[in-house]
Length: 411
Image 1 (cartoon, rainbow, N blue to C red):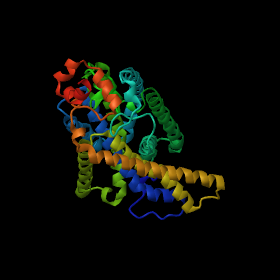
Image 2 (cartoon, helix red, strand yellow):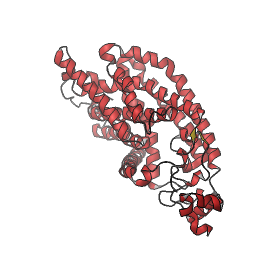
Image 3 (cartoon, rainbow, N blue to C red):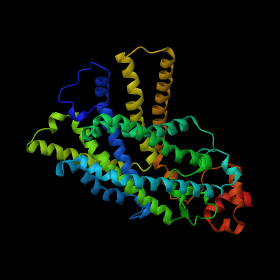
Image 4 (cartoon, rainbow, N blue to C red):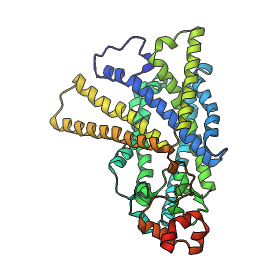
């Protein structure tokens, strides 16, 4: 990947494989970083809304989070030394990360306990947008795989990190270590979650940390969002937000640095106009980040979009560049392996993004806008019967939701 801050004002001349990678990764790296910081604000505001809701939605927290965004965006202009900021964050982040992973495992345990409330008829049937089966779908596989590609996220930060390292030659070793650590933590959460709760579990494990769920909650819309917040979930929400705000101290300044690297001639030197351009760029990053985070509620949608860029940067781009530059002779088995990786990456990128686009298009549908637990989810007749059987006849007819749903079954 390119050290964009040192590319210079002229177009790079492609002479070898590293230079080719430098040329094609400039824009995509910037887009990926913008996507990552927008996703960070989305999850931060959602987590803080769970931990301490200020309004009916996360909008208030999106606005409050502009304070740390502003601090990080202007850090280099005010304090100058990005390495000093990274060093301070590195002292705290590992402990916060371990705390968050531990609570994620606890959330899986609570989700497994709650899934036992789901009747058998509601576990294995898949009807429309209702209860998902444990069998993967064509789009579902691509979406899940694209989330895994998010483990490549740190790679886009290599150029700036390398500039700040006392021993730049060690960047590859630490990057490989960091990547596999990220993969290990990712799988340690994903595999147990899918093994114990399958697709019936919540998208956000914090939603498993709720109490006082209504009777028959598993048959209502947005079932995992029903109930009252419980202190473990609120504690975890705050720790996730703290973790991401600390991470912003890495990604936000690097995003600004990469964006300046796209037009280094406009942001180098001294003078009033240069300073004004730097200020306008940083204000633009802040406004763009929080506008997108406020408009897209589902963090999985933003994850899929950002992962698509990461797939291009770290998988598709290097393979195409490798063969275009003819760096070395390649055996037939290796070509076949590269071809399979390329095809699977393209599949994950386009199909995964298509699934997230569909979710984004339908985000304003009445069913999506309805509050948690206000109506029944779409379900099979067997699941509906199980839900009606979980209530007495008097309970069913005392409430309009129950009465409309069960009047045919209850006579």
